[in-house]
Image 1 (cartoon, rainbow, N blue to C red):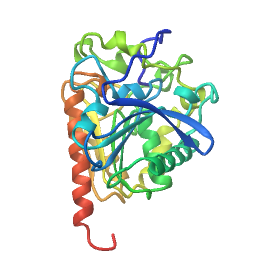
Image 2: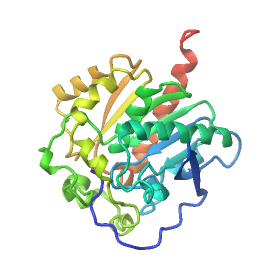
Image 3: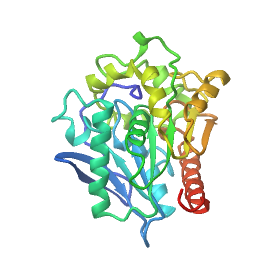
Image 4: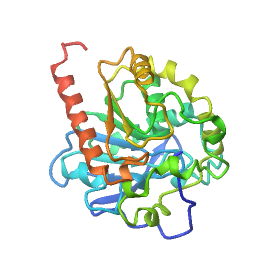
Amino acid sequence: MTTAVPATTQPTPAPSPGVRRITLDAAGLTLSALLAEPEHGAPRATVVALHGGGMSAGYFDGRAHPGQSLLALGARLGYTVLALDRPGYGVSAGLLPDGRDLAEQADDLHAALDDFALRYDTGAGLLLLAHSYGGKLALTAAARNAGRGLLGLDVSGLGHRYAVAPRELADERGHGHWTRSWGKLRLYPPGTFRDSNALVAPMPVREREEALRWPETFAPLAARIRVPVRLTFAEYEAWWRQDEDTLAELRAGFGEAPRVVVDRLPGAGHNISLGWTARSYHLRALGFLEECLALRECAPTGR
């Protein structure tokens, strides 16, 4: 539900300075990714960024405005940032034309992160930073295996109650309604929509089918999350209900999480990391990561 403009065939733009393309072995499935590491010294921690439906890892490397890229910002502040092309996207798209369901994607993600940890320093642990459909994967992965050094979850553009009718969800092209996916044009820097042509991708059919079941899928997943959670809703978010009663129910769903934060970001549309407020959101997310690190340090022995 994050796409908004039809993809066109054009060369993939070069990533930001200091960002490079890598591949990871997910138990025999090759996944592509973008990677940025601190220039000096070991990373404090690693941010694993998961894009939404119909997008790609480049969503987290916005170039339309200086300072927009999560990858460049995170590395500059001392973190490793790994933005993964989810299964069914990037180099795995040809092998998985119908995509994978969330449980399968979670297994692929864990396998890819195991491979990553063998080859790269991950610092004090991992923060899963996810957008929209990627947030569904982050919750699924955390619920299925909360170990592996997971520090917390930071999710934007995802709720648990749709604000639209099922017929308004992603269609056979992988696109939802343009205005719901982006919001007002003024929320994005000039050049965003030209550059976005290289970021969008077809949304696999299995993702579209599974999206309809999310309101029922959410509750058992959320109940098994045992790390801090932060959820961000854009001011102009149109896919998800965010009235106070719904948000109270959303928070209550994370009954085992030691901390649940629900935030709103002024001046933002659904695709937060490509908008004017991208830097603000990314700084808040990295601040939340620091809070997760501090919470771990001060936790009683044995927790």
